[in-house]
Amino acid sequence: MSEKKKRITKTGKIKYKMKTNQIMKRPLANFTVEQRTKDGMFCATALLKQWNEQDGVVQRKLDNYFASSKTAEFIDT
Image (cartoon, rainbow, N blue to C red; front, side, top):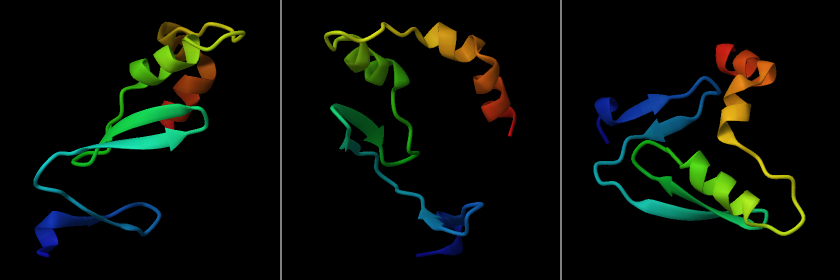
């Protein structure tokens, strides 16, 4: 694989860039997360929807996540 198609992450892992995009379904606790192979993106809205569809849980809103000071600290680091 050519040097242009791989990169090294901050933790030293080698990541290869895929030419085609596939959707992987990953199990996460009681949920299924769909993630793109090309860039690793997953839809937080879809994950949140699965959370909110459970019985007996506190409903969550994505707006509250972005308004949180902990989120701002996480994004800034």
